[in-house]
Image (tube, rainbow, N blue to C red; front, top):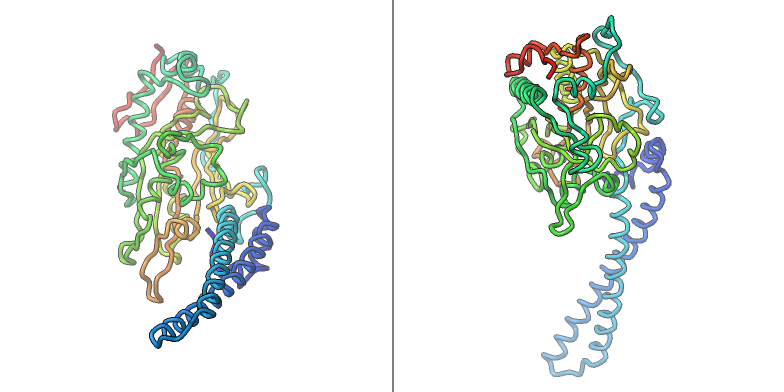
Length: 420
């Protein structure tokens, strides 16, 4: 959530930034509501003070045995006016706050302009794999290995679900073990969080109201299935004051995630690239505002270390302002080369959310100058399904078998995945 005081004090700078994100007009509506609400609040306080003064006069008159009928009628009229003004104020502030909750974070100045197709490539790492045969895609490889079954999953769960079986289960477990081991070495505490959360957690992280259509809801329990463990990890700071000496606090969430993929009909329907249920390891950091830019680069470096250790060819993208999530001030994506598709595809992202989520969650720290909101950052360590796609397609052999990266063999994966 944006700081309302900043919107009032530096309106034109905020307007310029929100216009970059395509929501500049919402600022005018917000400020109009805020201006009217403050006028009504002033009136409420004046009427409240006047009613209090008259009530004291009535009390004195009664103690002295004097008739205070006129003052009582005046106090009653002021009470009626006050009730009406308070109701109007509640309505105005609720409408103002709803608009405020819908505004995205202010993008960092270095964030590129444009939309989904305007990301800037910061670097390309590794060598694109070359094959002396026509490379298969992950679904064909997985079926040859006896490791992916989407047809049977569709019968009992519908489209965009899959069974992972046999060798791919061993590969997944090794991938998780490798990532958790590496993240612990980088100071991240492993966490298995709840994946059902209340509405407050979704609003607190900025997924509501904008991304509600992508979230699975449990109608009978007022709970929501998370699309990323960023949500419950951020909840570790809900209504908390973190001591400055504790920061940064780094967590690695290991969880199954769920997304309705609303609006993605017809896209990436083959295999397990875009599914409703997937496993992911997510990095999350609470840090001081002065350290968040450096922490962002630190998270990105961990992501690149993982991709490099897996022998993947990838590129790092600086995401344009029009493609940022609501909470992000700046975002980097790592896209791995997928030989079966013949193109780079996103496998990780990392975002600096500055104090946007912390304001909504009321997560603060005691600093030298007083209380201040912390900064929060998140980044994918391993999106298990997409990373396995890149591994299968990058390290495939002509006969359909797959050479497994050495780092995963140390965590229980076989040296090679053989045909079923």
